[in-house]
Length: 113
Length: 115
Image (cartoon, rainbow over all chains, first blue to last red; front, top):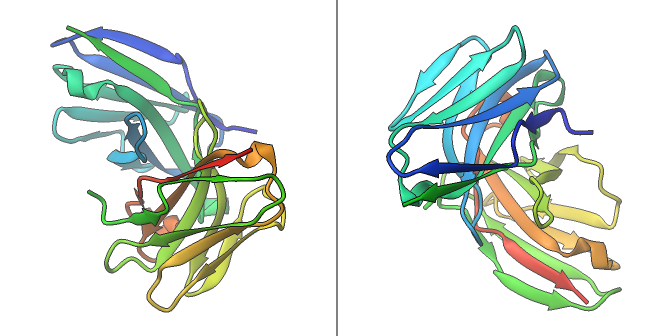
């Protein structure tokens, strides 16, 4: 079964506000985590990744936080824009299955104007 | 643009038929993985090819098979199509395999509808 899951299937955000998308994982052997954005009719687009030896990583307008104690991953999007509307997936890579990514079900983010 | 290209973008097949989907990996990437994404769900790993050999397989039956060519491009073949095979098929490329934590880039996918 799935070991990576997202807390909420949908998230509605006011334009300009910050968004936080959460993800929980159950396998403590997970070594590498990635956030993808998928727009309607397109393939997943890499946003940011983080390895298990890190707690935080920042990109352009995005920050990923990893809490290994509670096996929780989050993606923060600053100053959310209409173009951020999409489905967001977290994915994990485990040392024991180092050849595949395991995806959660996704969170649909809708940005309100 | 990720540099991962897939073809065809859309196709319709009849139950029982066979289909071949194609993928060109990003320049310099030697590893290709295939995923199936049903509507409203996350992608599910099918298999991965590295140096022209299968390097891991998900929970998919043998009628799902693949190839990788010397130029690292890849094909996904599905025999005896079933209605539940209707999905978006995604190709992902990376360097030296996903276990090293290298960035994994996806193509735009091939939409398969089985009727």
